[in-house]
Image 1 (spheres, rainbow over the protein chains, first blue to last red):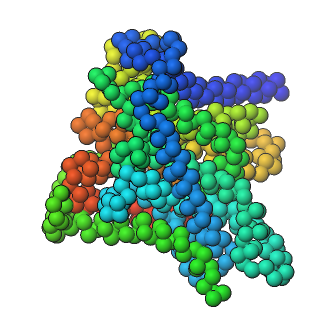
Image 2 (image 1 turned 120 degrees about the vertical axis):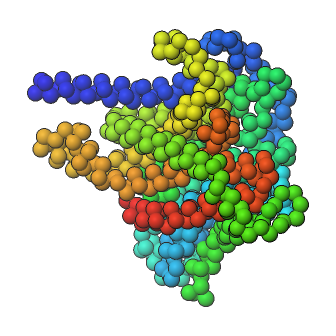
Length: 280
Length: 284
């Protein structure tokens, strides 16, 4: 008994050693990067790395005065909000159809929607570039909105579909015997019941949209459409090359709201990330 | 009308996706039979494809994608399982989850700069290794093939292991605790329970998670674009970066489209075989 207890104690030491090391591996680079964002540019690339920098808000002043940071922020927010709105308008009826009706071809349609998630952005990058060029949409947030919506539509549809499948049929039947139409049932019963799923889907779509890089790089060429994710890559200047403290600061600027929102939907995260395949 | 109704509901989403996948697909196929630079399109038949099959850079890009992708995916999967195994019945599991999530919530482009600074421009990693006494001189990570690949793999593992971790923890937590208890009363060890009971039960979940991660790894672009640009000697060029470079650096659009079409065919095969099966059985 005593040896078993000792063994369990050892197990706990091993467990916390493993989890603790990974926690350090996650956090140390982040804290160091934050210190990069809060130091003057002269202390970043030095013959000897500086681990304890002098605190400075140089980068903060620089991102607002040297670049149109306000435009980048506005472009990011508008393109993301717009794309999520498009996704929800298209995905909610689609998910309703895929989860609450049986009809011929349903499985294939659902799978087709899912399979668009598997497409590498680079495969369609060139045709999409030509398409937007012909439509005169290059370097506009409309193009970003449309493409982000397309990237996320499969994810959003499948997450909402998964939540809708959990609603008991009786709930719907009761309303139907009261004479409610299908659309009213969707609006008054189904949507309120799957609100957590809709929010989860919106948050996941938001994260993917913020992260999007390749299409934005091709579509945006000026401050008209640069988002934060791509604007970062242009933070270079002078002989010193990349301006790391500005990049680090913008990274944290984008991180904070995402972190808050994700912690708020933590319980649904695993289900969202697997497009509804895992009910955590 | 009643029988059409469900089709009408799903139609807008399907049409939207067709516009953004089918149209580009047809466009790419058509363009891949042409020489397209700045002037008008010239029909060249199968030339682009012949050239592509003989192009060592194309095969190298495929190979690099495969090598870096499979190493990164294996590492992430093993690490996420190890961490999930130790965390899922821990009283502080919520805390661990929030901490481990942090890298995943940074923009990938920013993460790429973080590691570029740590490995190359700022020489932090070299400096730390020298302080510990593991090496005597600065390492030029960007000029060695295995080390340059390693930096890309590390950046991916750092950022995306949490993705798998979160899914695995959720899958483990949703399993019936009574089975574990019963096995433990029979004298089975934690490790044995995990290996013989929990792991087989979560196989469908692992399949779904690994497929999703695998797709994102093979389409890796931002990290290559920011950290290595494919150097040294094209050894870190992924297939996505290859298509981008041919299309938007040398403006050889027809040729890049031919590569896109081959990738598209590959994607359809993978989607049909793997994804369909995983998501069918994946309703856990």
